[in-house]
Amino acid sequence: MTAGRTRIKICGLSRMEDIGYANEALPDYCGFVIGVPSSRRNVTVEQLISLKERLSDRICPVGVFVNAEQELVAELLNGGVIDIAQLHGREDEIYIRRLRDLTDKPLIKAFSIQNLSDLETAEKSSADLVLLDHGKGGTGASFEWELLRHWKKRPYILAGGLDAGNIPEAVSEYHPYAVDLSSSVETGGKKDREKILAAVAAVRSITI
Ligand SMILES: O=C(O)c1ccccc1N[C@@H]1O[C@H](COP(=O)(O)O)[C@@H](O)[C@H]1O
Image 1: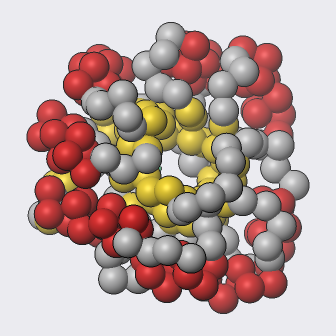
Image 2: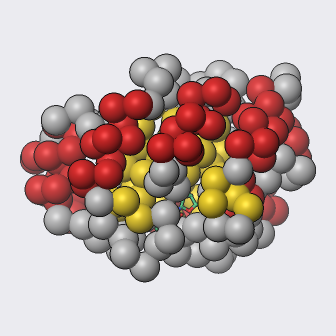
């Protein structure tokens, strides 16, 4: 995962229409929430496989998991259904080590950021990339980005409450490796074509 322009991930695709919007907007990554029934964006493995089949090969598919069995995560990675796994639950270093025994594919670990100590924990993660979020995921709320001014230790994905309006500040002030959006690119709980296009355009229009 190399530095350069800020990437964008659109998360929580669950319908074939959503794949059409993504293929038009061409974000760098798309996220699929797998095995999380409490999320309205949840997809089954069968749904994931058919959605992925229609996804442009110019977009990197990311599986978003919450405390999933490592065997399932590894199977989807090794089988080429997803390219990256995002661990968005209480997965610890022991969990990651065991997963590394099963796959050599890239792993993103999400952290809920309330204070500098949470950032220090993220800094030590053995994941390939860390994702800094407000809470348990998909809440539409941001954490206190000011905390990042004291922490420039490793590349990170910024998530939580991002939208086309606050992306310019997020990117130009904090230089994340990538921004990750879900709630703000929805209308009535469904992915919205215009909002996805606007969010991708907002990131791509920034030159820093
Ligand atoms: O989006 C979900 O429903 C979700 C469920 C479980 C874990 C993570 C989830 N989404 C992640 O949340 C952020 C986006 O949050 P927001 O809605 O833009 O505030 C992103 O990292 C998603 O991957």
